[in-house]
Length: 308
Image 1: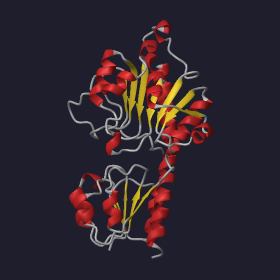
Image 2: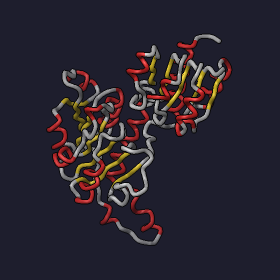
Image 3: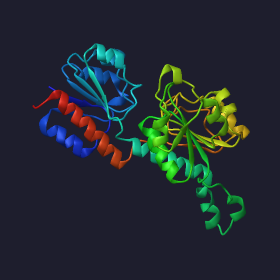
Image 4: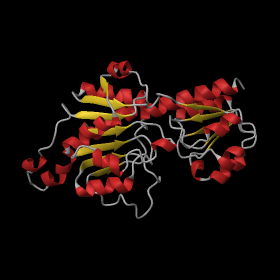
């Protein structure tokens, strides 16, 4: 009988500690095979997933003894949380464990898009010296606009302030301005943020209300020459509108770590778009964050399952 079913990658030390006390079925490729997950589900009390395993519908219904879903990360849009809770299942994200990794990714995105330092390598090796073509911008003094100000947004703000950026942010209605000030940010309205930020970075949760949060109208309202970064969830940015804005030069650049369809399909409208930097949903994945996220998730599994 399997105690813990793990369908995506887990830190090796965390995996070893689980195997010392529980029967573990570990297959990080199961996320691509939902029928196999459903076949393995009966009798399993603990399920551990990342963001690609869809825990809903027939897959969720197949678990007849499930007590906990451990999420190796924070987003829960791949889990039917309401249905799980109705079944008496505890859903446990690793809140805060990868915040530093995502924050560093956003700062890297700011530096990459503002300085463009990677572009000269081939020219220098070819004996050229294109100094006049590489006069770009400092991060210092630029305004960073954060849409969403949870644990990750606050970590981004602290790092950006240390680099000399001005940080403004929007969050849910009723947000306390003191919480923003504590992280060096200023609470503003959405219109002000879009119109004045040199870089806009999204840190909101994925909900029906945040689908295409940054649509054609929002992009048109952004400061000409601004930069957009999305390391939150796919679907929050209208990718067609973004591609059009980059082709037209209204936006200077964009960095996307998440997409409406993952992985991208052949013929994606993002192919060939200028000044667009893409990564495969890795902003929260580093060696260090994987260790933290795995440790938090294993601790949650142990708490719920108890001693074997």
